[in-house]
Image (cartoon, rainbow, N blue to C red):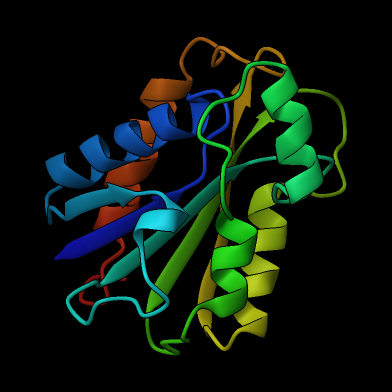
Amino acid sequence: MSALIVAESSFGNTLAISHAIARGLGRATTPYAATIASPREIGTTIPAYVDLLIVGAPTHNLSMPKPATRAQATTKGAVGQTGGGVREWIEHLDARPGLRVVTFDTSIKSGFAPSSASKSAARALKKRGFRDVVRGHSFWVTGLTGPLLDGEDDRADAWGALLAAKTPDNQ
C-alpha cells in the first residue's frame, strides 16, 4: 500500500507531524510506504499507485493558509512560504473520486474553534470531486511558531498506524 502525505508547513510543526504519521503508517500491521511532499513538489494529478492521500496544513485564521497569512507568518520567521500552498494546490487538483483522503492540521490549542485547516481542506477536496474524504485530527502547538505540545508526535504516530489499519480490506 502507498500513501502520499502532502503538507504545507510554516514553522516545521506540520512537517514534523507528517513524519510522525509516516512512521505510524510504516509500522502498522498492513504497512504503507509513505512519501512526504510539499504542495509545490506535487503536480495536479495524484499518481495512480497512491492508495491513501493525506493532506495537512497549519491553521491560519481558522482555515488553510492564504497568501496574506503566509506573508504574516514570514514576518514572524516562517520559512518556505514562496509560491502556493495546500489551498492553491487543491484548487487545481484533478479529482480521483475513489481515492481515500484524510486531512489534518496543526493548531494552537485553545477553547472552541469553529473551523480549522483540516476542516476547510476536507471541504475543498470534496468540492473538487473527491468522494471519500475524512476530516482528520488537529495536532496542537504551544503558540504561533510552536513547538508541538508534548505527546503530539506520539499521537500522530499512533494515528498513522490507525489510518493504515483502516484499509479497504478490513474496514
